[in-house]
Length: 67
View 1: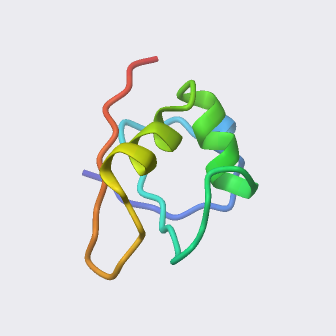
View 2 (view 1 turned 180 degrees about the vertical axis):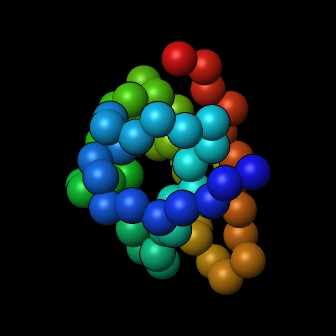
View 3 (view 1 turned 90 degrees about the vertical axis):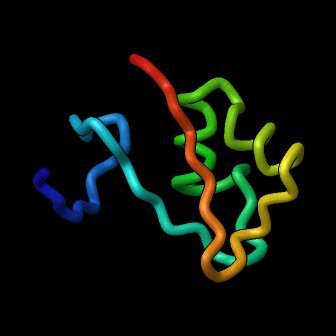
């Protein structure tokens, strides 16, 4: 497995997996999270609401999407 970092826009990245750091109180309505949330039809917003994801230390959310 090859791991690398980039500052490219997420719509320009070709990858099998994408890891994104989310900071405390960060919401999916701005910046990178907004772009990613739009790309997955609001899935990130729904998981944050449903699971109470708060970006605490050690907390992880996984999103399985295709396409």
